[in-house]
Amino acid sequence: AYGYDMPSYDKPILWGSAVGYVMSEHARNFTRRVEIYNDSDVGLDWYFVPLASEGSLSALVQDLYSKRQPFIANMYAPHTDFSTVSELNSEFMKFETISARRNPDNNRNAECYLQAQCRDPMPPLFKIGNPRLLDRFPEMHNFLFDFQMTADDVNEIMGAY
Image (cartoon, rainbow, N blue to C red):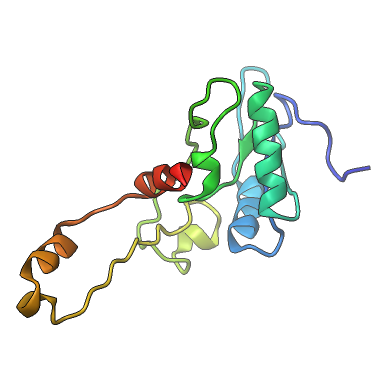
């Protein structure tokens, strides 16, 4: 009825958000190209199942997490899912990262990306400042160029607010 079977260790599901997202298309292609192995089978089948929206995926992740169920979800960072407080222990939900190999060209035209054999390019976090800062406020100019923030830092800030 759903277009997929219930997830199992032999037929896992990679859950996603909206169908039209580039990362959803890449995840769908990825599940078609990457084989999963276990002790009894070689090259298990697996599904990519988009849930129509980020909110639907977040709700599923929170539900499965609260029930301590195993799951695989296609999520990006920074995102509020990484700063959501778990009802189990009042801390941020913690996830294990499963990642394809690095995209050596860091772009969507890389051959490995087109073949769904490496991960999505990693976008940088940008910072901007007025070019006159150096003359008028050198301490702000220095702060701007010394300041660094990772996606994990942004996730933590998002969780606080």
